[in-house]
Structures are given as structure tokens and as C-alpha cells.
Length: 256
Image (spheres, rainbow, N blue to C red):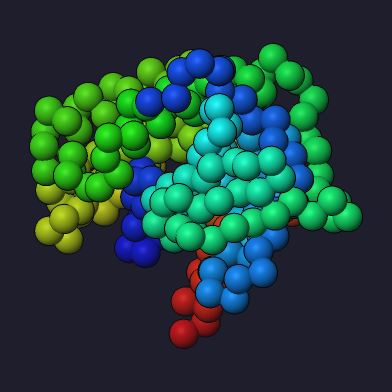
């Protein structure tokens, strides 16, 4: 069960630019010819989600000439120059991805006002939690962790699904004994918490397919394998590669 708890914990730490408002209307398929990069392409859907070379989908926003992508962990920063993405941060540094005009990338933008609101909230998240530091130093600073949790709760209440995902992880962590218990491997056995389930359902209702992934992992961690399988299958059916991967790992573990 521990690895499914760790999966939930991982989303907490997957897991501040001014002239122009943040947006997420970048749409297109960007590909690199570099054989050294782990990421052969980025496909932006014009609505805040980017397919990261088939590894899964992340959130993104664009501010001036910067493109900020949030994978499971860390952060990717690019500079946009016409139809080219130039990698700036670790993992993408010194690599270029060019827009492939003859390739089809989905465009999921349906509500422009809502999309812009989400981009601006993600920008606020970046400003308050990632711009100055992306390390785990706050884990050992009670005051910093308290401020971080307050920020996450506020952004979740404003409608940022990424913040709600992190709030979900924080609630699970608190239920098993808090950060100290996690770091010393002395976590309590998780028990059903209706508030955590309610938050998972809220995330799903917000249109975040990975809500099924984390809710399924939570059900699995408390021993409800039937509900876990149902959530993971729903996520897989809706296109989540993460849900499919976690479900596969669970099945392999059960077979051993």
C-alpha cells in the first residue's frame, strides 16, 4: 500500500512576468531533432494542458515570451521565439523544439474567459510557490509549510485544479501522521476520510481526469481495491496514461 500513498504524496511537490496577462492559448505540436532529450515533443492543446512526449499531460501558461510547463515534478521553463521553444530550465536546457505545421494537435479551447482565469491562477501559483524555490526546504520549516498550505487552500477555493490536487495530497499526508511520520516511515494506517473523498470528487467535477488517478490511489491505500479499480479505469477511459500505469502496477503487485 505504501507506494500508492507515496504516489499521492508525490503530487504535493510535483510538485511570480508582468506586462502581459498570463494565458494558455498556445496550441500546436513542437518537436525536437535532438536525440539527447528525454522529451521528443510537446503538444499544447490551447486550453492549459500539454502532452509531454506521451509521458502524461501537464499544466502550462504563457507569459510574455515565457512558457511554463508543470509536469508531475519539477518545472520546465522555455523561451518562445516565433515558432520555436528554447529550453531554459533543467531537463530541457539547451534544447530546441520547433512547431510542426503539418502535424495535428488538438485544440480544446471552448471557454476563453475560463481558460484565461485558469492561466492566471496557475501564474499566481507559480509566483507564490515555485518562482523563488523549487526545492523541498519548506518541508523542514513549519512556518513555510503553513504558508504554503494556506496558499494551496486559497488557490483551490478559487478553482485551480492543480492546487486542489496538491491539497488532496496534503490532506492524505496529514491523515497518516504528517510530514514527520512520512520522513521517518512511521505513518499511521490510513482510514476512510469522507472529506478527502469529497475533494477527489470535486477535482473530477472540475474536469481534471487525474482526479480519478489520485482518488483511485487513495481508495487502494485504505484497502478498497474495488473502488480503486473503478476510478483508475474511468481515468484510463478518459485518456489518462497515469491512471493506466498505476492500475497496471497494482495488478502486477497483486499477482506476485
